[in-house]
Image (cartoon, rainbow, N blue to C red; front, side):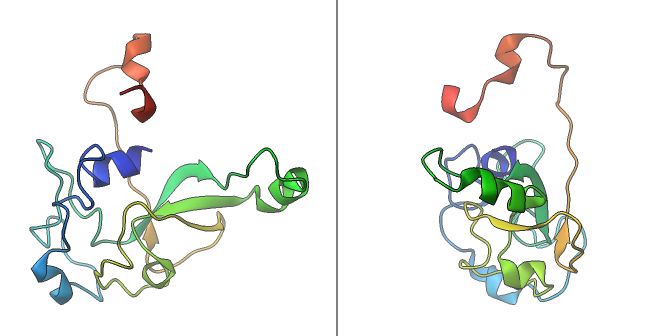
Length: 145
């Protein structure tokens, strides 16, 4: 939820920069760029978050989920317990093709992979709260808002 929230400006836009694929996006990729490049790939926060849709795809703290009505849920969950979610890039991006396209960079889509796998187009991002979280209201979810 945190990646989705940041990459869509709190669910208000399709991409970090707005609702339409940026015209300069076709010139981005297939290799990594310095932090802060391309200049359009930043959120509307202050300070902005850079590279949510033009860098590598990112591990997120989530596992594959199944519906409780799935009759084989326990079996499937056992098979999938080491698979974790990846946001910010399609399978092509994860494998190292870092071109920015609407299809491959939709922040709402999720890929899954074994957590022990290593890919050229897969990384992680670390973040911390701007202030200490001490009260119950500091832990509201997107669904609460």
